Length: 220
Image 1 (tube, rainbow, N blue to C red):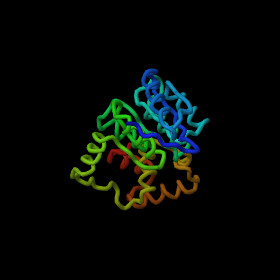
Image 2 (image 1 turned 180 degrees about the vertical axis):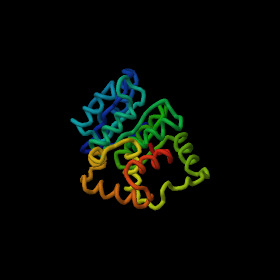
Image 3 (image 1 turned 45 degrees about the vertical axis):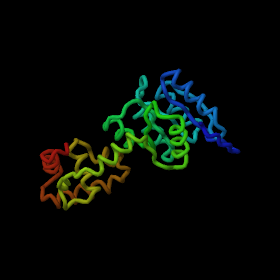
Image 4 (image 1 turned 90 degrees about the horizontal axis):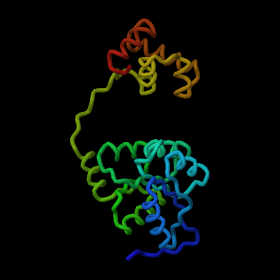
């Protein structure tokens, strides 16, 4: 039995899914309780991004497989625009790649289509409260992933600071000082200082030799 919760201000939910029947089902479920309301529906990732920006809903229910802009990129853009956005992925995909891609994009939860109504409502409310939420099968997979023993890869160029390694990687990719400054939001003078420090620590004569070292290490 679905629990009805009454609230003075219902949580506003944006449904992003390209299947009308699934959207209708979610809408019906949300309208059956008192503390949730559907503020809008989107059939494409691009529309979801625009609606999320304009309406700023409390929760965005995001499918992964949509025409044009997929759910991963849509999530990434939504979270980039509003870092505190609450995106709950609702999808049929339960593979590692999809789950971790969604989390890296900024999703706060991951739920499989076919989850029970009670589980779906609980996940929406939890994400709205800032919690990370996963369906049972996905949660077990995530826990197994992080529990597995994994060898620690040796740190490339340990004498460099984290920022200097970022700069070195961009140098290896052929970035100019000006391009690196723009990408890392640094002043040109700061980038030049980083390049000078990198050359000193790597004991190379110039930027060209630093580029070679970076590419030999696989940073290019």
